[in-house]
Image (tube, rainbow, N blue to C red):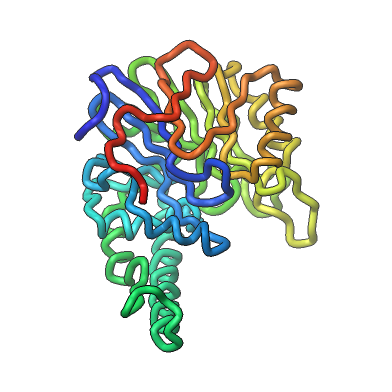
Length: 306
């Protein structure tokens, strides 16, 4: 374990900041580290290359991982993290575990096929090209999963309590709430639609001092015959407005910068909640009563990304 003092509670954004992919939020609770979501960077090549950078902290220094849901931009880096030295529990719902048992091995197979193809045509800088992770490493990651029920209180690390509330979206998806040293933070994950024909409507957020809210790429959803699994801007506002009390601040993540800024203005204007659109490695003291005590240089992240 490593981190701040016993009563410290801090957040560092290691992904989904300024981009729609790669959700990774590092929470330091006392002397322990909890990673909320462990997603792949997906999309254009410059984003995918981020998966090959050294993780900003030593994987073995992370004590636990909690997954909001199974989509690869939230779970798909987990096999790599385990292969690099993480050996703690991965907390998630049963639905998330069941979907990951399909998605992670499938992701590994695709990565292995891409490496074989790159070797065949000589398109990789590496000789030979190698996959980000293998099917065996995906299986090892699945072995680390510990399932909990929606609403069940659990302790991912000593002195820090957690729970997961249903969010609709897909099977097993939920919002993660962490509490330590008298402060609470909720990570929305992807928020489902109240009108979804298959999934239940997302529950209101837990009573929290801070909310990290994932937004859709466009923050607007057009109703198609097949429906959409993401809440649109109006539905995100309604979800934030249904909180038992107004949080000190909201962090908008997982969206394109223009969409995030547009939603930021609406949240501040219509709900009166201070909003921050964080950047990569922004650091927040969650015990502070200030609106946004962010620093660009996290004090406890000795390893720099390459």
